[in-house]
Length: 348
Picture 1 (spheres, one colour):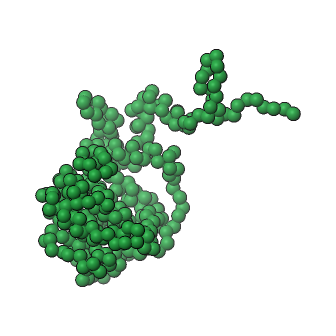
Picture 2 (tube, one colour):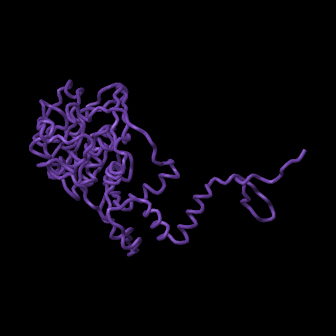
Picture 3 (tube, one colour):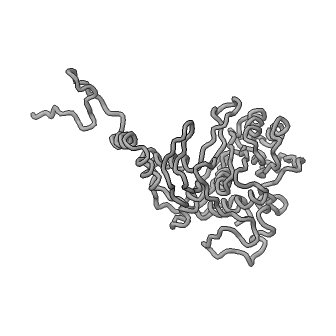
C-alpha cells in the first residue's frame, strides 16, 4: 500500500529551523496577501478598495498625514443613505427585499428597495420640515423596527448626525447621551416589546428631558396600538406624533402642506420614483465629504458617561464595505420580496 507522507496544502511549517513544527494556518491566504499589499503601499491598497464602491465624486488625494491628525479621500463626496438605498433602486433592484422584519408579536414586514427609498425620502423631507438640517444632531431611542432604520438612513441622507441609544437604558443614561450630543430632536416610541410585555418608553424620555437636553426642540413619538391602549400622555408642546392619530401623521405632514394620499391628482404612476412630491420639503440627498461626521456614538456600550466617538462619512463608507464580502459573503442575490405592509397603515 502506498502512503502519501506529504502534508496537505493547509498545513504549513511555522518553524523552519532544525525542528519542524507543523500546524493549521488560521489566516486565510487571501487575507495574508491583503496584509502584505497594505503594508507595501497602504494608499494604493485603500484606493483600490474605495474604487470598488460608488461615489458622488472621486477623491483628489487618498491620504494626508498632518500630525497630530490625518485625512482620507480628500475631495471625495458620498452619502451612505444614497449608496445603501438609491444606488440599488436605480440599478434594477427596486423589487428586491431590502428589509425583512419580524418581532415577537408575530408581526412581519418586508420593504423592497423601492419602498424603502420612498419611506426614507419622505422621512428626510419631514426632518427638514422640522428644521433639522446638515450638521444637526438627533437622538434615536427606539426599539428595533423598520422605522428606526428608515430614520437613520433619512438622517444620513440630509447630512444630519444621529446618536442611537439602546431602548433599555434608563432616564439617567439617556439624559447623559442627549446632553452630550447636543441633540435638537429626540425620536422615541411610546412602548417597546420585551419578553411578551409592553415596556413604556415615553415616561423614560420625559424623565430624561427633565435631567438634561436643553437643546431639544422636538420629541417625535412613534404611536402604536399598544401606546393607544395605555393612553400615552401628550402634554409636552414639543411632541410630534409619527403615526396615524385622528387621521393625520403629524411628523410626516411636516414635509408638505398636502399628502398625495389625500390628493389623488398627485399620485405617482406605478413604479415611478421621484425625489419628492410637488410642494414638499426637499428629500434630496446631500453630498458629504471626509470631514463630515456620520454619527455620534459612545465609547462604552453601557451606562457610563458617554464620550464622543464620532465617525466620518467617507472613512466609515470604505471601512464598513471593504471587509463585508470576505467576512459575510455579501453578494447580489436574486430575491423577490413578498407583498409588504406599509410602515403605517393607510399610507402608500
